[in-house]
Image 1: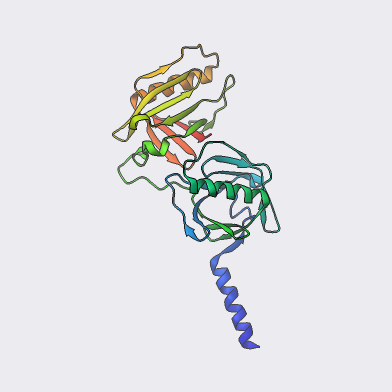
Image 2 (image 1 turned 135 degrees about the vertical axis):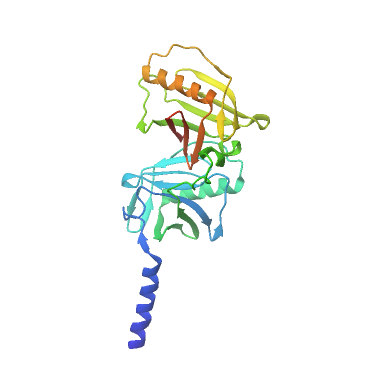
Length: 265
């Protein structure tokens, strides 16, 4: 009997050492981002971060090929969302497309969710997705600007909507929310977007900064003062060069003491 007790105790110590905790515990996942690192036991790697992030009341935000958002519930060890909203971009990577289809369907059906230290495992039948805590972007090397880690290919095909200006939430009172989108025609970097006016122009990284010196834009009068101020500063700073930061679905442009923060659409 003593041997049985010691064996059970040893197993218990091993489990505690792993830091196993239910994903529903607000102290473990809510307010955190997790990046996908393994699928069905195999290491996963992608040029773009594939992630899932938990907001208040388990509201899920994430990206595989497409960005998705969904209210979710956690009961009896099962995380489930029956109302997933997602963008509809074509996924050129067939493997990533299959992961997206399977994962979103599993979320709708319900996945078991367990946290192991800084890892989060979601499972549905034989399918297993493992994530690793990824709240903070890797720091830039000493002496370099935030933009040195960002390359045109990381921005290509992505569209970002303005979320905050100088740390304050930004909402346009008139018209749609400003956005900027990137593409790479002929190995160049093209920016398209709108604020008061729609614009397009070629961008270039030089000395760790992004420049867009010659943009073509419509010339509509801007009746929203806040939007007009943003548009004026946005074009001015891009002409002078901005530092670019990219962490998950968040893009930041910084220059002259100003910070524009965008979230991927």
